[in-house]
Amino acid sequence: MVDPRPAPATATRAATFGVTAIMLAQWILPTVGFALLVHDRGQVRGTAVVLLAPLIFTAGVFLASRVGSRGLAEELDEPAWLPSFLRGCILVLGVLAVLHFSAVGIPLLSSSVETSRFDIGSSGLGGFPSRAVLYALPIAALIGLATIRDASKRPAVTLWVLFASTQVFLGFKGGLIEVLIITALGLAIRYGRFGFKQLAGFAVGGVVAIGYVTYVGSKYQTLAGSDAGIAYVIRRSTSDAIIAGYTALTARPVGISDHTSVLLRDLGVLFGRYLGTAPEGYSFDELVSSVVTGTPIQRGAFLVPVTVGGPVYLLYSMPVFACILVIFALGVVWRSAVVRLRQASGPLLTVGAGVLVYGIRLFLMNGNGAYLLINLTFTFGLLVICAGVGQVFLGRRRTPGAIAVRRPLH
Image (tube, rainbow, N blue to C red):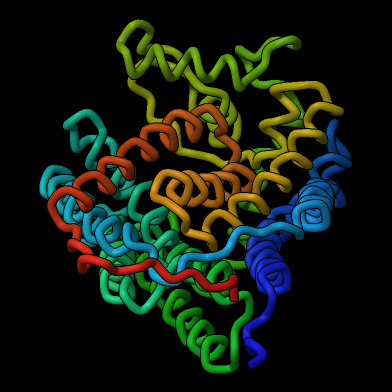
């Protein structure tokens, strides 16, 4: 009897195409915004790299798909470790989320949502609660959806609800949009393509997300009396999303010399800040924020977080040719991580793949590479702890003599 399910290479190709298309659909918006800024204000150094970065990344994905399409490992039908891992995430990350919001409050319910949302790092306890909310929950939800099976459906959905709730509580306008994107990425990795019902569900979710943007935007003093609906979302996703990157390429920020690699510089600044050895240093994004917002660099000044984008960050970190190679390599790694997530062969590899998919997307959208590198490494360790807790305390013992069944990717 012929197995009706698609061959592993075909299924993996569909998943790679689907998840990459979703990521590119988001990335193309600030790229278009950059093109509009170039048209209105003139070219800046590195214009070609920024505009061609999505194509370079896609070329890396394409090459990796062609070279690695053969010899794909089979997918575990019901990975024994998966349900206990997800339950461990629910327990550990759920407790840390409660501790975080208990310490800093719920920004959405605050009288000053616009400012209290940036107080996310004040929950203490070594940064575990804040990183659980900011990074670990989105990645765990992504893993849960990308690896969802019958046995893991309930904890995966519970974890997704926990993730969506915290995104709402954080008070960021794009909270529900982020939930939709993570959901789409995870399901695209698992199933490859969406049917009419799934697309209709995302459409309804999009309407709700826009409504949430309008509601939260009405609580921001800087948006009082202005349009915070779909027009705002479009503007915020295009030119506003990359204005900091364009500004950085227009003139080198104060404190950044011609031969400075901002990646290495930021690593030094952030480690000095976290360890308390040099708490007064400023990262590249903070220096750019000072230029964009007109906020002077001085002790105690609040610098609004800005996003320069991955290509701009790389242009300030290495020569142009190396920047192109890194963007291409990220496409190769992206495809490999998608394959690992589909296979779900073990907790360490799967968690690592989830961190890479999430981290690559976040870096290409926002930049801030050193900050992400430090925090995602920390998050990887936190998710490994979740796996250990799940295995030791929440795992269900196998029935004696049970045999793991494997089936092709589909």
